Length: 476
Image 1: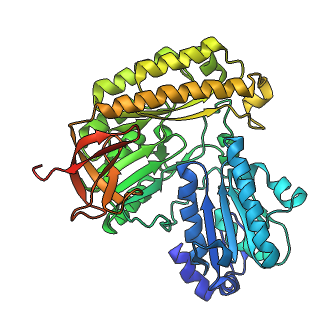
Image 2 (image 1 turned 135 degrees about the vertical axis):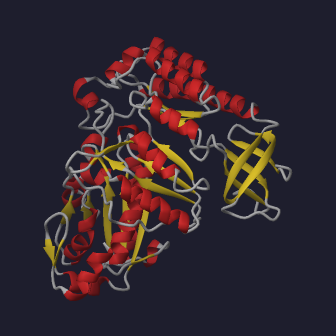
Image 3 (image 1 turned 90 degrees about the horizontal axis):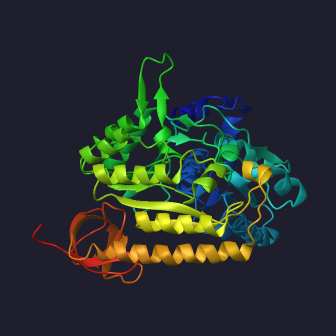
């Protein structure tokens, strides 16, 4: 994109990757000095995408602001995975439109998964946004803003089979300067029956490993000490050159990033149980700076429900995978996703989920009751037949059990010493710092003379269900 900017100084037109032509120089002049505000919801991929959008806009002359009242362009990067997330976005859009009444020149745009799914409703029926941009069309955002400013409907939600934004250096919106996301692939081919991602983000495609490693090197040179490799299913990462004479899988990519520096921690998210391989686990065991933590969504403990969810594994297979992880990585932290009340879930199926949780004892979990999403296989094939009060009661039982397991897991860490990357000042006290250990647990300790970006060894004296509490061990 830097080369593109140089070209804009000399050329009147520029052709972007979507094959569209627009007046590049005048576009930059029109946007010079304007302010944009961006708000993100949902998965880490959305937050990473917002950093790509920020880069595209800054290269077009915009400057970022944290105050949406002063913004010329307000963007909201959306999630469609649950109805609650969509309602949150609608409430925010209502707030932005109240401001727009007094500031009609302000443009409002919706990005991401909701943009893909509800484009017509937003633009034509509700008329609450000026711009709608899907996850694969961010390069066209400057042109769409220009169109919207003339009163036209500005929309591009075309999905792509090759867009990875590999050539765009993200603008890091999280200013801690210590941890950063690197998107390694986009889309998903798994077609879980409850999930909208394949329809809103398209098919899987992997970014080339060279640009990924280069981005990790650049982050490390800027002082970052941790990167998280992101994808809807990172274990499916598979890159081949055009001649198909060279290929890189996820285990190989993980090793390449780990070799950038032993002082650069590496994490990844998210793994699909059916795809994570022994090669990945052995690579994690080989490199001290690859964190011993895996997010391994199970969704349900019932083989029958897992089959209806099209997850590609059984209860027994999942438990076998957990056993294998703990054989190769004995101190590996494990977290998961759980959905209660999926179509046809009986009380027996629910008890299967609780018993699987008892067998695994996850350190942490993201827990939700089922929310039918239009267009998914489950919406077309199954009846959403579990009453909401039953879904909520089952969710409450899952949460209670997970809280018990999280407390138990943290209790096991009393008296241990962990290497912690200092990320920020504690929210509860400016006298304390906090950061995560290898297993992704948050550790809080007195600030003393330590600073953000350092590695410290913390001896754990006390715990809560969510946090380890200790003091820096000066003898390590």
